[in-house]
Picture 1 (cartoon, rainbow, N blue to C red):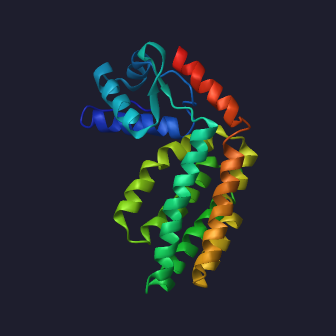
Picture 2: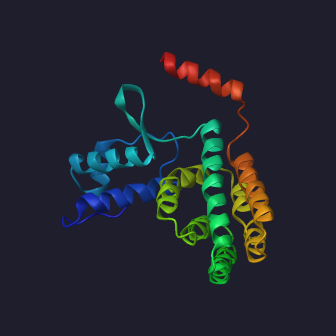
Picture 3: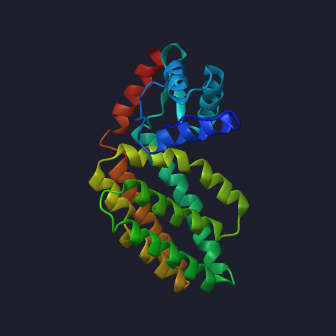
Length: 231
């Protein structure tokens, strides 16, 4: 991470730390030490502390044993819940876009987002570009609903989504984010086929959830929860 000047230390420290987490520089479960981060950024521990507190509110950082802060590692259950909520939000967006008199313009905007997603995959291994294009498509879908509360809620899920994607194996990430998984949604919206669009979105989210949440069963998760509560 680059050194920061004195003018906007608090904001820039927050931006730099958030980027370090969401791009995988810090992995889920990694300890976030104030002293080490402050030294690397050439800022005070207080500035780092404020940034970390903000990231806790965003759900990217959690307090572990003895109050030590770590990058949040989502359990399989949390990953499942994340994609269930995203499906509900984006399903509402789909329905509102289809019902809109500006559906044609919305479809054009979504096809432009699809083109950017396809272009991102022309550079194999460029995960950052692929993830940005994937999230941009889903955000654009929500924005086109013209429902500001929906967009605000979706944005709160963006950080955890990035952490989950960065934690997955490369092949699983690429299969989840490819344009081929998104184009049928746009096709159904263009046909004004709400039922088909929602079914395709459900299949897309279910596939992403299965690929990214890992093999842990509910029983194992419950055991982990009990164990954590006892520590």
